[in-house]
Length: 173
Image 1 (cartoon, rainbow, N blue to C red):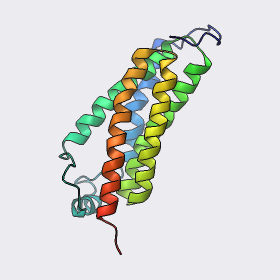
Image 2: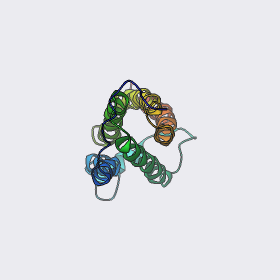
Image 3: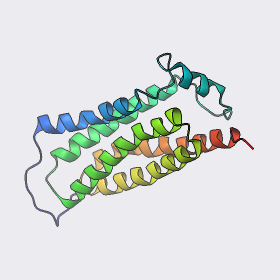
Image 4: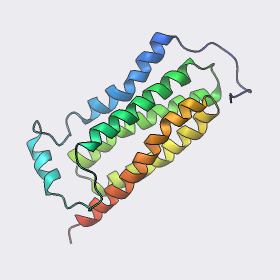
C-alpha cells in the first residue's frame, strides 16, 4: 500500500540506497565500539560481569547474533523504502529508521560506558515506541520493509524488560 497523496518522483539510486542501508550496521558499530564489554575494554567487561542478572537473560553469545539479524532487517527495510517512490510516508519512515539506528548505538553507550541503567531502560522503551512508529509508517510505503523492522520492536521490548530488571537488581541503597 503506498501513500497516494504524495508526489510520484523517482526513488533514490540503487547505490545510494545500498550505502544508506549499510548504516544499519556501521552506525551502531561505530557508536558502540568504545563501550562494548570485551577484552578490549577490560573495565567495562569487569563491570558487566559483576552485574546481577535475571534468570531469563539470554547467553551473551546470542546478543550479536540477534543484533546482526535485526540490523540485516533494518538494512533491507531502508533499501526498500529508499527505492520506493518519494512520499511523505517514505520520508517519515526513513527518518524513524535513522533515529532507531542511532538509538541502537546510543543505548550501548548509555548502558555499558556510562552505566546509566535507569536511563538505558527508558531509552530501550523509547525504541519500542519509535520502532513501532517505523513499522506503522513504513507499512504505508512497503509492507515487506515494515515487516523487516518488526524484529527490532520485539527485541527492544524484551530488552526493555531485561534492562529494567538488571537496573532493579543492581540498585544500591
